[in-house]
Length: 471
Image (spheres, rainbow, N blue to C red):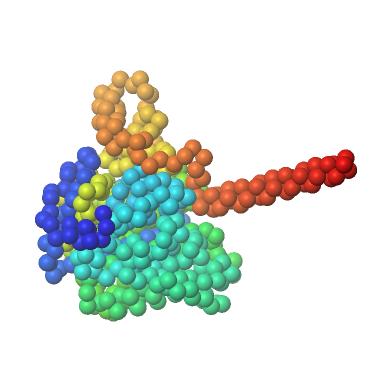
């Protein structure tokens, strides 16, 4: 679908969204009418490698996040939100509302498989009158943010960029800017964000704020003291930046007009998973694994006067849900003739019960699982009891006769059969998980080809010499 077709579709009437537990071949988002004047500003604060054990309101033992906790006290803490276990696919899922097997972005290295015809969330919001801005990490998705519907952007090319010794430049609306010595890139990102909000304060706006914290390499922050714990310092600085964002919204008198939604892009990185405990217990798995610690992430929504204060919700959410939710709040139509997997949680943001989804789906690099409240079934046919998640995932024998387990296996297998991810855009068997590994593979292939050319050239010279000597 091209932009003209999409805008034409945006003028058509809405169809009802399918109930959770089915495929969401939805054409529109429910919610306010497109002419509504109550369209909120939406800021998605997308933290990097932040799991439950890094945020104190989720019970983190070793880290304090008072400003993020304030968002939870004044809003909703979602307790069962699921990303993909790796940043690239999770970001693509949020922007498209579609599972990885539909877009092809099943690892960090497969961004080129995402079609240019995909309608990204900012394009849908633009059709509803929103100014759209993106600031931060933009490394896995191909093309520029402007190609995906962002009016303005500041991006940096990879993860963990903080100081000039790590990155010499960043990009603003297609133009390369030098990163000055002594300047902290997350502070530059914050300043850009404030400028964008100020410029567009008289119209609704959407900001995709892709923070660099707390992705490695873990280095000092402007607030770090000699000998301090740099990982804790980075969590504290991330929290500080979230607080500064909220303070700026207050100064601009936009706070009650703005939904701030804080979320982690995947679980805690392996190197820090052991110290990121929750109430004395380590989570099952970490970033990059198909376990709770890889995908169960913090999600906090704060919209004063709209979101109920201090509420925790057990409702299941996955990353495909953000697209239809934001469209519902904005009065934007979802693209036609494409399957949107997400289910709107806009009602819950407004204090209503809504209709929570019955299951979530997670996929990474040719493996997947579907999970409901108490059970999980993966692509290997393994069923797990999830009553003690996120700490323990208890395997259930394939020949178990327990009535609840038998019924759960049947339900979840029916979901997987209907989704049929194996028939989608799956990676080749040797597809690397990350861009770094893909680049290493390319470099290794180049070296092998060069050595082969040298061997062939040497062999040719020897043969030519032999021929010359024999004439």
